[in-house]
Structure formats: structure tokens, C-alpha cells
Length: 568
Image (cartoon, rainbow, N blue to C red; front, side, top):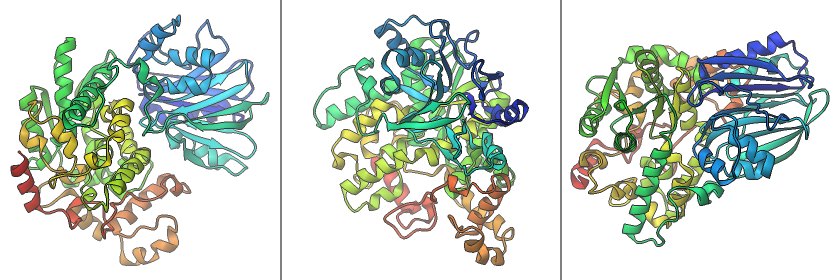
């Protein structure tokens, strides 16, 4: 995890540009460089480094002697960089994983280069010989990237929108900051004065398709067929491989552990593989909530079962409410579900950054979207509709859960890794018959759960524990986190303000006082950028105007208890 920033064609003084780049300094606490590229007017790079690989030569923009015309600023991890280096006999100058992108680009061009990358990444590449600038972002937008392009050809690039919002205010021409689309690359022609013109924008990977780099993957060819045993074996193999490849790096590894299915599978597999590869330290796991919250109690059971070094972070509703504003500044969104869930993750990340030496943090993000884990999937009108909704959610992760997970961890100098969004795992899972991926026997994520039945990786009661939203499970069952928020905000936002909300906020007008409060805080820090959120996250196929599963008609405490005992 790093922070990248670049500006092409701006005539602002370098001190002003540097000040914009410094706004994302939290993403790379180890080092900072701001560089004006010699021989090119108005071409600047800013880089904030969190050192994971090659402590000596990993500073950016990356520039190697063999390819003197290429400059690279990137954020992420290329898990197959050693495989690609060996396969194509590249002579790399550093141990930095991103260097392989320079060699791939020089030999094959940008389209094939990005297609062969197995990892999570966002980058800006300058080719001085061809006078081109290239941008790219991984399939699910695990790593963030924003761009600003003015009518007169000024291009700004930043890991977070806050690195570009002041540029918009200063420009005389129409411009807006927008997220760069995941799974795409864009090529710009670079003029002598630093101005650019977009000449190519193309999608290089679709989540439902096998990635081009699969032929070099260590798992190799999977067994064919859709019988239950074959499918479950393939799911386990791909998931374990997804965790194994993400062990890359020299900084200490930890794992978020809510006690739910997804984070428990990740943590258990991580502990297992850490022993196999001989890591010299125990894996630390981290849970957060009130002392009697469902998540804290479940995570405690899992940690004891797998033998992790477990840390519990307790917080009160009052402490959570106090951090909402900081979380929104980090998130750059006002989506209700995202803000709610961010508070616990922000606080646990703060604890990890201040109290431990874990830097690389694993998490269970992406599983709900991939395996149809949200409760409303029980109401899908057909298997086809459920499968289509799963793909839609995966494609929009960069607007919601991936955004939350990245910003809350990067705010405290941590790097997040998400095995459930491994390219091969997701492509395989989405290739399975639609009926196999549906909720079955009254249980969401049935196929994933059944794939780990009997292997004793995690306790059975956790394997069949029903879905709890992160924002609901961190407080008491009797009074969930969202209830505390709603009660507090009832007197913070007036009825008159709510009546005026559609006029004041015509785009994504808030329908609750909680949503109004989040929007008001957002507008204080990011006025005029409400379109960073195209729409609110909301369940489908049911009559709901609220993202909490506790307010869905398909959720009852009784059904939760029955499912746990029946499936355990």
C-alpha cells in the first residue's frame, strides 16, 4: 500500500502541486518523494511509500537503467512477479514487484502487460520515447485510483480524491474528479507542453473470465466437471492458493477477524500456511466491538481454535459516534452502509497501527459479493437473477466495501490483502452453474460453507454462522450499532432540515437523518463532489429503504438460531 500522485500539463507552481500530493501522505509513512521529470515540461510525480519489498531500491517513481525512457508510480502488489520474471527471462534491476510491469510494457505493450499481472494495483506510467502516459487499475479496484482531466488537457492522478479536489477549485476549465474504472487501462498522448489527450480506454479483464495470467499460476489446471466433490475441492485449492500468494513481503502479517465465516476462513488458512512456510512470528488477529457483541464472542472462539495471537479492541457507542467525521474524511463518501461499517474498521486499524507491528493485514472482503452472502439473496426471483446481482456487486466493490476497507486501513499506514478477490478464484466461482451458487437449505453462501465441511479448519458453529453485517455485529444483539446512531442523530438533524433535503442535495437526496448527517459532513470536506457516489448501497428484491439486515423482513433472531443449530 502506497500513495501515488501525478500531474501533467499544470502550470501551477511546484510548491502548490507538492502540497496537493502531501494530502495523501498517510498512505505511505515510510518515505516521500516529489519529482519533476527532467526534459518534460509540467510533468510531476509524487509518491508516499509503505515499504513491503526491497527496502533499498523500492522508492518511486521507479526508473531502471535498462529502460531509461520509462517512469512508473504504482500502488499495489504483483503476486506473480517472480513467475513472470522467470517465464520471460527479464533482467530486473531491483527486487520490487512492480518493476516487472516496466519490462512487460516494453516487450508487449500496455494491454498485454496489465493482463498478465496477478495482483492488486493502480499505476501511472510515463513513456518518454513514445510520448505516452498510461493508467491502469486492477479488476476489482482493490487499490484506489482517481483521475482529473480538464478540457484543455491537464491530467491529474491520485490514489485518493483529496489529492485532486483543490486542483479542481483552482482550474479555469471544466473538470471533475472521478474514480478510474477497475479492470481498465487508458493511454494518453503527451504534448511538449505537458498537456494530454486520451487516445485509448479499454477493459483488460472481465471478472467472469479466466485471467490471462492463469496459465502461469502455480495451481495449474483444475479438475473438470461440476459434481459436488470436484467443485468443492477446486474451491478449497483456489482459496488456499489465494492466501498463500499473498504472504509475499517482509513486514509482519496480521488478520482482521470478526468471527464471521469469511474472516474466519482467511485467518485459519493464514495461520495454517504461516506455519508451513516457517514465518518466525505468530499471526496476530484483531476483532472489535463492545464486550458482549456477537463479533467479539465469535472471534474469540475462532482465535482459540486456530491458535492466533488475538487482540480485542473494545469501543463504546459514544466513541464510535465521535470518529464518524474522521471516517468520512478518510472514506470520501457519504454512503450510509459504508460509513456505518467504517467506524469499527477505522478504530481497529488505528489500534493495529499504534499498538502492534503488524502492517500487512488480511481481510474477508469480497466474499459476500462473490458467494451471494447478503441476506437479500434469499429473495432472488431466480438463480439467474442472483448470479447477475453477484456480478453487479463485484463490479461496484470499488464504490463501497473495497473503498471502505482501503481507506480505513490506509489511514493508519496499513496494507490490506483480500484473498476472496483473487482473479482465479472469482473467475472459477462465477463459472459454476447458477443453481450451485444460490442460497440453499435456508443458508446463504451454502457452497462456500459446504466446501469446508468436515476439514476442521474452523469450528462448525462458525462455519454455519449466519450473516451479520460488520456494522451490526460489533454491538449488543439487543441494541445494534445502527440503533445507537439513529437515536443520537435524531436530535442532531431537525425535521426542517430533512424537509429541505431534496432541494439542498438533489443528487442522492438523503431519506433519513443519519444519511443527512453523513452528507452534511461530506459536503464540509468535499463540496461539489457528491457525484463521487453514483447511488447508495441498498438491498434488492425486497421493500427496504435501509441497509441494515436487522431491518429486513427476512431477518429474525429465531431463524438465525435455528440455522446455526440445524447446519452445525
